[in-house]
Length: 438
Image (tube, rainbow, N blue to C red):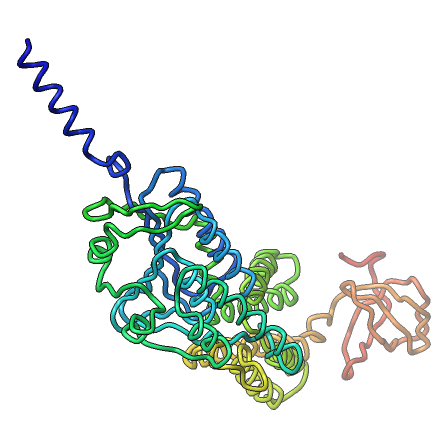
């Protein structure tokens, strides 16, 4: 019995030497890819909350972004700097970047790492929709420079270079960032990152925390399907497709009223397109050209020839190419957002096909009516809607026609029968039966 108690005591003593915070803890991992928007900001906030509630060792944010909106960026920075758990920003995979808003997010982390072959910087502020210039640009730049300098000083990083990245759109590689003390380390992959940050001390909420990440299990946090869907819409190609399909749906409903499906689909696509356009640098001149193209396509249905359709196609292509191109040219820090050439070609062909099909359908219907519409009423019966002596009007097959009585007079209200036509004028006589068939 004494031996068993001695062994138990030794086991308890050994267990007491193991750091309690390492027992059963995990490293949470979140991934940011694409433009920084409100949906990404909400995702980061939820990831920090989950890591805190789950007692995570730290939260690693894998980052690859060309930039994004100032509001979403500041929301993310505030959540990182006030996080109750250590936050590690890891610019990865190879070929990734932390540009513009991504620089602020990387600088705010307790530990910042980059994969080889990545770059960081180019954070000069630019406008969404149109560039900011003059006094407003000076104010915004001064504010952004002070903001990045404060973040860098708080985290003990190179505040001078950070300010240069804002004022002059400076951008550097991972190795240069390490040498300039912009980041803390370079790691080729996530496992190596865990090994390198193991044992590092960071200040979180006024207390010093030692990271124990070597061999720690990973728990990946995914964005909710709704936020992921909305975030995926903030893409120039996706927004362009939704805008085009929405316009097509509305026009299809206009030409076929009462079907509802094209109209509802078009409205949904337009709403989603506006959600995407709200987070993208839209050129409203491009929008105007696309609207002009639609007007030209519609007018071409009412006239002969295809001159307006050709003009509409040119206007649509120009509007598509200008859709996300501010004027004048913006700073290189602006995220590269433009519609792909192949997508412009496909959607232009789709619009041309759509309207040419509609035009041909209308033309066939009008031609059929012109050729046969008058002949089918010969032999039909109707009523005289005015006295015919010999000219007047009649109602045949629910349509009112100009008519000439072959045996005048025919009084208003009398039943008539169509016996012939001359151009758009019917020739009628009194019918033998008392009332026409309906």
